[in-house]
Image 1: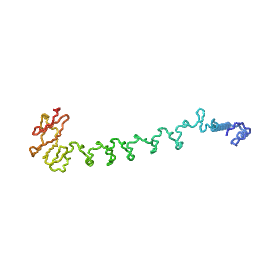
Image 2: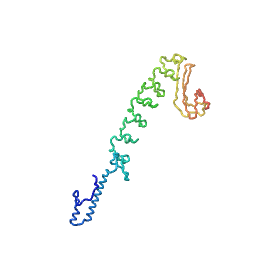
Image 3: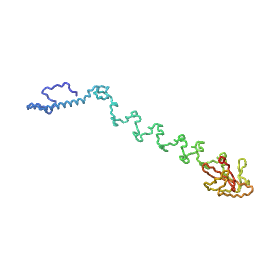
Image 4: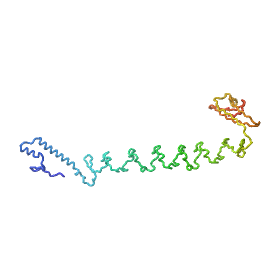
Amino acid sequence: MPLPTNTSRPSLPYVPLQSLPNNTRYGILTTTKRPPTAEMLDAEFNALTDDVNTLAAAINAVQAGSIPGANDPLNANKVLKTDGANNLSWTYVTNAEIEANAVVEQKLAAQSVTTPKIGDAAVTTQKIAQNAVATNQIIDANVTTPKLADGAVTTQKLSDNAVTTQKLANQAVTQGQIANNAVGTNQLIDANVTTTKIADVNITTAKIADAAITTVKVADSSVTTPKISSAGSQLGDVLTANGAGTASFFANVGKVLQIVSYEDAAFVRNEYDAAATPINLISFKTAPFLLRITPRKTNSKIILFYSIKVGSYQNQYVSVTLCKNDLPFKVGQDDPSYI
């Protein structure tokens, strides 16, 4: 209740509102005719001073009701603020009135922190729980190549028919990556299997269709004797050309009576004669080979075929001369620059 403002000194004798201890102290002293001591007077005045201080504190605690503007509707929901220089003002609670770290988690209502309240790049990896980002939280086409770890996309993560031709780099699919019988005819584009795509010795007889190899596909001199079939011919028949582009086996046209061969597979290093030159022909082979052929007729033809493998040091030349009875039998063509 408000304090009275018409307080006056009481009439005598003063009767207190309630009986208090020692409220007749000085009356007793008067009866006994003794003066009050200094201790009594100090106690009375000290107690009165304490009462005044207590009353002042109580008044200060409730003085808000007397602050100007407290009953102004415009100050509703505002708080009283001081600038520390004895100036008071009414204000809403703003960021300036909230001390750093003053708002704790318990003071935030559930779902109260919305997207606009989160600063850009404020949510770091450590703030995201495991398995917290679901498919719906990823924007379409937002997972780019740099975001995929090496070896992260496994076979189970690829849907059937998901890897198309345009997604394969040239020469990216090697033989080791293709399972047996995995590529069928329907998977090959017409005319798309080129020579460079076929490994050496990779086309076997069973893979060649009947009559698929025509004359223009056979290189000159590529068909050797073992490749020519003599089916239907007789013993002693000879393969003969008719001069019109065909060949047949005929009897009694002529035949090879003897084939004599000799092979010396040994090799000798540094075998040479310093005096031998393309002009000065010298035979220095210490052990010449010997072939014996007995002709049936005086006009029999003897065909001699020979093959010699030789080598030389760097920046040196090699010359071969075939001799018969220590005399040149066949001399190769000279290179004038080395004479």
